[in-house]
Length: 143
Image 1 (cartoon, rainbow, N blue to C red):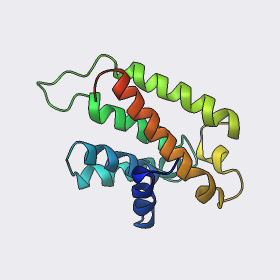
Image 2 (spheres, rainbow, N blue to C red):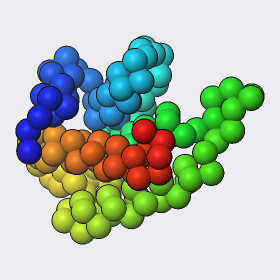
Image 3 (cartoon, one colour):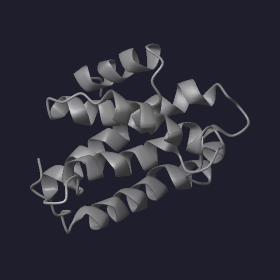
Image 4 (cartoon, rainbow, N blue to C red):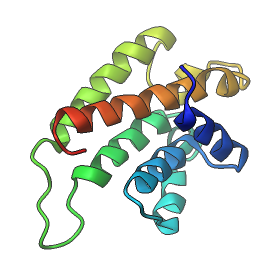
């Protein structure tokens, strides 16, 4: 299902942002915030940790997005005790949805030997992961 979020994701991709950056930019936007340093740092997760083909940047970016909402950011704050449970649920869902489909959750598995798969597969993976993160945050009363 195409909606405004999907079209924002496409626009960000056209602007040169990576999957992990797109997820965090959407989360920041939802909170009415901007943080260029955080967005810049998220590039380290792209392409499976610096385009090394390891864990998909969408999955690791999704975990960071959950932590943006539920993690500890100041000495006075407390991490939401459900954060790691939500991350574990996201990982399990991602493995079931995409790991089983592509033979693993690393970028090298998802893309296979065809770089064109980045255009074919990644947009839907990013979109569905964003939806799952939002679902987890809502289910836990954080959103």
